[in-house]
Image (tube, rainbow, N blue to C red; front, side, top):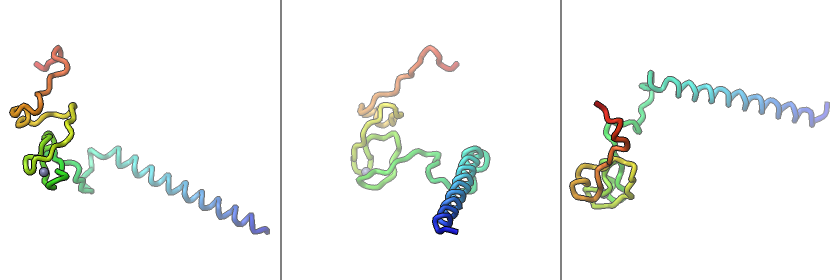
Length: 108
Ligand SMILES: [Zn+2]
């Protein structure tokens, strides 16, 4: 028995194991995606918050996601035109209120 055939056999086993591990991981990921809404209480997900907030890079305070100016230190964020403006910033004139895209299909 030559040594090269042994190496080939080990390589095949490694590839087989990698395929099995990949299959298990992908199955677990798909299962997690499928049942995310029904049973998502096993893991705590800090990204899911009822209140949206972002951290100011200057003063490290959590501020409202809609704000474009930190109310603690005055740090200015880039304005996202697609985001909902904060009422304070509409009042101060920094941002304009969002216009409804389709006024014809307004809810009754
Ligand atoms: Zn700040």
